[in-house]
Amino acid sequence: MRRPAACTTPLIFCSPHGGRDYPASFLDRSRLPTDAIRRSEDLYVEELYRFVETIGAPLISARFPRAFLDVNREPYELDPAMFEGELPLYVNSHSVRVAGGLGTIPKIVAENTEIYRDKITVEEGLARIDTYHHSFHAAISGLIAETKRIHGMAILIDCHSMPSSVRPAPGGRRPDIIIGDRYGTSAAARLVSFVTSGFSREGYDVMRNKPYAGGYITERYGKPAIGEHALQVEISRALYADEAHFRQSEDFPRLEADLRSVFGWVAHKIRETYPHSIAAE
Picture (cartoon, rainbow, N blue to C red):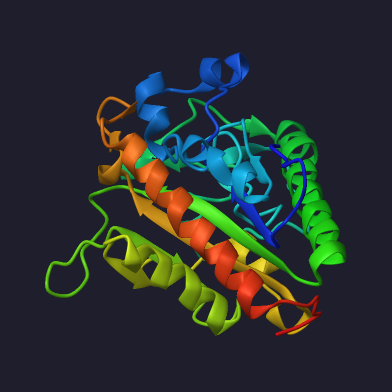
C-alpha cells in the first residue's frame, strides 16, 4: 500500500490484478511455463499509477498474481472439479465466472489454457482465500472508511489493463479506455463524467461498460446512495507495453504522465464540485 503524506482527495486507487510475485509452490504445481501463466497479469498497472500519492490519494496493489488468487471475485467462487475433497456448502460453484474457468482460484489463464497438473486440496484453497482475499478486502474497506471520515465520501478507482486484442465494438472500434460503472449503478453519473472527460481531454478514445462493466470490486464497493462510489478503468496494453514479451514500451512514460494529468484534473473537479463534506450524492 502506498499512502500520501496527507489524504487531500476522496479518491482511492486499487490494482488487484498486477501482482508478479509467484509462489514457488504454485509454479511447481502448474503445467505451464511462467510466460504462459503471466498472460492474465494487468501488466505494470501499479507502476502506471504510482503518481497517485502526489495528488493526495492512496494506492493498494496485490503483489500476488491473479492466476494464483483473484480478489476481483466473490471470496468463494470455486469450481468443485478443481479440488480434492468436498467444498463447503456456502461456496458459489454456479457463477458465470466459475463456468468460464475464472473463479476466485482460476482454472485457466488466457486462451483457455489450464493452469494445474492436478487437483488442489480444499484446505489449500480455503487457506489461500483466508490469507489473501480477506486481507486485501479488509484493507480496501479500511481505506474507504478512513477516506469517508475525512471527506464525507469515498471514490474507488479500480485499475486494470486489457489486451489490445479485446473484441472490437461495432464498426471495428478498439477503444483505448473503458470506464465501467456497472451500467450506472456503482458511482454517481457526475463522477463518471469527470473521469470519462478527463481521458477524452487527453485525446483517448473512451467507451463505457462494454465489454467491461466492472467486476466484484466495483459491485461490492459502489454504493453511491451512501457516498461510496466505485468505477473501473481498463486501459489497452497497446498504449504502454510489449504484450508478447511482458515489457514496458517506450510509450510508458507518456501514458503515466497522461494518467497523472487526468486524475489531477479529476481531483480538482471533485474539490470544485464537492467543497463541503457530504454523505451522499
